[in-house]
Each structure stands twice: as structure tokens, then as C-alpha cells.
Length: 529
Image (cartoon, rainbow, N blue to C red; front, side, top):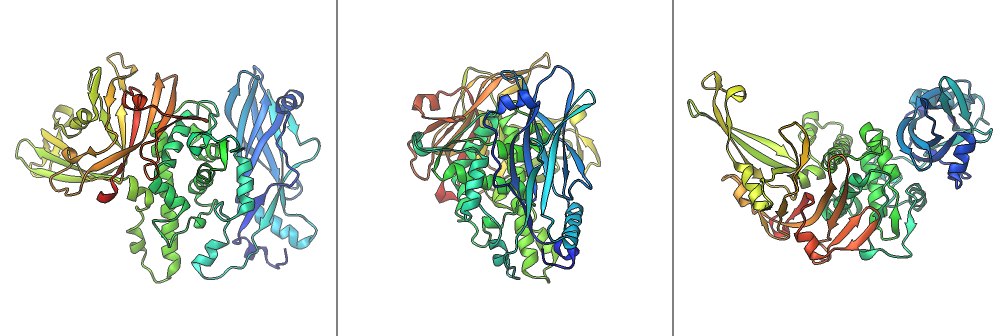
């Protein structure tokens, strides 16, 4: 550092760097049994480090934390690590932590660097395994774990494009690409899977995440946006900053590794950990609902990408009014592709006053008739059925100025380019228990027509092509997700089955006679977009 004022440096760009001699433990379990607590894995994104700690399991309560410092232990902070998984086969537990260097700590380091030019820029940390109040510290065989703090000293200009180009991206940085491939423990594609598709390892109950990621990979309009930028030439994905748009940035990393064709299998632990520290439910290695995870992921991708767009417009001119930015605050590629609009019409049955409301949707949730077999069209008919509002659900009529009996009808006003349909397989029975409906729903592969569900004011075409199906096998408490998918931009005839890390060709009978279908992904025919 060659500056005289650390406060001027705090707004500069810094990032953590893995030490060159860091190696993941090869004899992990032996080390755990000997040392009780071991750093199993670590990866860095911008000024944040994510780590996994493995500890020897005991029958009594334990607590794991990380103590870190940036000034040679003159000051230190402690963060807790969250329990993520119990390995019954090895009698060990995993804990995960997130270590972000706060600005006030970084300012201390910069001040110290000015006083002592030989002081290195790094963060040191050690792991604590506490059992009934007694602490055991793992400090890497008497040497602290260390991560270097690097300043990005590349030239800065006032140009938005030039500023974005200095940011690291897996698309343009070969060194970063190699590091991220190591983070995901990729297996090279020497023995190619069918279709040259990369599989995803199951981390223990994470098939819900794998199935969603495989379906989004084959959502070509979204994949092209991230990797090829076909939809927005002014907004390059190199603009993603992992300190601000962490989910979108990590999704780009994962998407590239899946798409590039160089790998046979990868372990999506970094993506899961980034997601998990935002929503702790996904940090644990337990079965979750694929539909809920899909909505969560799309919502956060929308927020991240929308933030980039809003920031670019504000930076392009200082004279722009913020209300103009507010007009695009709810727009992103996610909204453009996945969002449709309902038209909800409510009629007062006393005075016949009619109210119209428009509501966005990202997924059509359809009930399944109580029968052994039905068609998707049968399910769609229920979408437009009149709902009568009476008793406790009466509607407040603006004309009558009181609660009245009413009738509500739901129709589609605007169709999305990517239509996601959730078949409502889980229902509550009379005993208030969740049960699964295994009715065989016959869905069309091509030319799904939704005109019957659209309002009279909607004049758009409504034909869709199926490109992915997420299946659920088993019960609510113990099930497994798989994905059927095809690349309709390359080979419309060939379907694949993705079962975590295993990829197989799919027989047509398994696609058409599929009583396990849970989520259906349709793309609007190109001529209708």
C-alpha cells in the first residue's frame, strides 16, 4: 500500500485470495478422528470466505465457531458456524460458516499498513470445537489459516463499460475459471455422459436443487442471457459483482461449468452454501420442495439483475430523475421470461358491480381431479372456474359500501414466454394430513394451447412446447426428484433423464406415461414471442 490516507482506500475494490499452498484434506476422516475438528473445505468470493468444518460426532451438545483477526490477534471477532449435516456412516458432523471482512476491520488493517509497511494484508482464523463448555482449537497444526487481502489496482475510468471490464468474471478470466472449477470439485469429461450433459452430485437430500438447476440450464433464453448476452448488449454479465449480486454471480459460475462441456460431474456445494447463508433452510442437507426452491431462486435472480440495471441507469447520468429508475425497478430478464399476468374479475351478486384487478404470476398451480387418469387440459379447466365469495369470505363492494356475496373469476391476461405449471400433488385430507395425489396427468409435448384460459381482452397466441419436467417419486417425507429435459434449440426429438450425477437417454413411454410429473416447463413458440 502506498497511500497516505486509509479512509480514501476503503471505497476501493478488495478481494480475498486463497493461499497458494492450501490443499483440501485427502485423509479427511482420519484427521477428524485424530484432531476432532478439521477445515474440510473453503472457497472465496470477493471479500467473503465460505467454509465447511467437519467434527467428530459425540452424543452430547457441541458448538462450532470461527475466530478471525486481521491485526495479528490484537483484536478478533467470533462467528458461529451453522450445523448442516450429520454423516451416520462416518459418525461426523458438518458445520458451515460465512466470513465477510467488515469495512471497519479493513480500515484498521489499512491504518496498520501505513505505520508498518512490512505488515501483510491478510486475515487469520482458527476453528473452535466446544463441548460442554470446554473448547478445543484447531489452528492448522500450530499455524493459523490465512487468506490474503488483495486490492484491485487496475486502472479505473469514468466509463461504465471500462469499470465493469476490470471486474473478475468466469467468462473472461482463465485463472478464476480454474479456481472455481476446483471449488466445485469438477470431474473432467474424459468419459462423456450422454448428450455431453454435466451431472450434479447429491449432497444429501439436495435432489430438489439439482432438478431445478438442470431445468433452468435447458431454459435456453435464460442461459443465453447469462452466457451469450443475446438479450441485452448494453448489460454484460461481467457487471456482476459478488459483493452485491451474490446469487446471480454464483449462478453464472455454476451455469458456465454445466454448459461448457468440459466436465462430467460437479459438486454444487459452493452454490448451495451461498444460497444457504441467505436462506438458512437451504443450508441444511435435508429434502426440500423443488417448487419452493425454484420460486426462491428466480426471485433472488430477479432482485440481483434488477439491481444491476438500476445502478447502470443511475450511473449513466447524474441528472436522471429517480422516478424514472423506479419505473424499471420491477423489471429484469426474469420478469421478461417467467412472469405472466392474471385478470381477476369480481362481481357483486347484489348490485352486479364488477371490479377488475391485474396480478402477476410466475407459476400456474393446477389442482388434479380425483381420478386415475386425466389430461392437462382437464386441470386447466379448473383455473377458470367461478369462485363464490360468501359467509366469511364475502367481498366488500365499493358501490354497496358493505360486505356482499360475490363471484370471482380468474383468467390469464398476459402469457409468459416461459410457462411453469405446478401440478398440485400434495393435499390435506380429512385428518389434516398431507397426502400425495398420484393421478396420471397426460400432458402434451408440443402445441399446448392456452387460449381457453385467456381473457377476451388477450389477443396473443398461446402455443407452447414442453422442454423440461421435474418429477417427484415417493412421499412428502421421503421422496426423490429427477428431471426430464431436452434442448429444443438443438435437437427437439432427443430427451434426457437427469438423476443427480447420472444422465441417461429417456424412452418416450417414460415421458408420456409419467404419474410422477410435478413441475412442467413450457416455452412459448418462437413465432408467438
